[in-house]
Image (tube, rainbow, N blue to C red):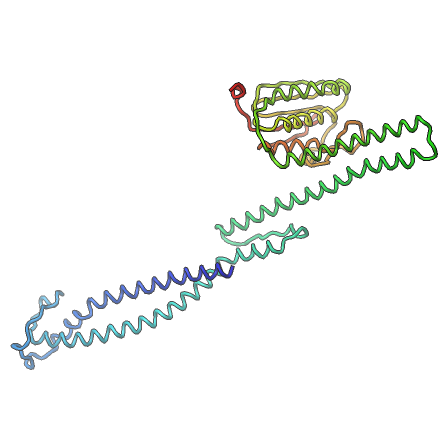
Length: 396
């Protein structure tokens, strides 16, 4: 900051000194043009005519002032006045230069000092921002600059920096929750496997118990595999899209709902699909996971005899289901990893709590947005908005 302050002080001080030099030059030119004529006009009438030798001095040109044009001045009288005015004018101009030079030196020193102070005043918020940025760490992300200054570029910069800190704090908090929840989710199946092996297989168990323990271990391994696949998919979608292609979102919805028809029938849930032709640009695999997770989540968090409604159109994808009531305050949290509307039940096919977080990540990767609302009668309505193309673009 000191170098920037030096540059600004040099700039401001240089401009002020240049302005002073320019003002001094203008004053000197204006004064030098009129000082001789003014002295001649004032001195000539006071010179005695009897002491002059009119024949020995040529008549000079009279000044052009109105007084000189109306006054009667003898040629010899004017010559003496001209000599006096030359000497007086030179002395006056010399005195003017001396006084102006001293004044300019003092003015220059004051200008540099003022420029240095002004530069420090202007750069003070930058120093505050720099000092705060150096102190930031994971333990004090809650601190903010909160610059108290009039509206301006530096105030806007400080407010922008505070907004960036808000986003960073939220991101760090989300990552910390993600790490803690992931550790818990990964530790649970390991604990189940250890308990089944140490307790269930102790004291030479009968074959039927061994078969039950085997099935339990296989089911736990499947859950762990689904969890790892979900984490990998979440990481891939968070990286963004490496390639884009035209994807018929309505056809993807039809394919996914047909694939989940058996699970819907097993749970005694009716799936209603209203799909209008919509084409989006993106990754077909990720979009398939997005639709699958939304519909599967609507099926698994439902009750027997319930319904799931899937709508596709230019406004995006909407999946609504019946089911237990959801607290509206918890709805935004459902899109965070390992967040559930209800406590874990360890039911088969329940998933690892990554379904809606993967949906949100895939939507962001495609430049879209995702949101949800709690239905008054129970259940949830999730809506995904994606940049779409007209259906005719699919045929070209």
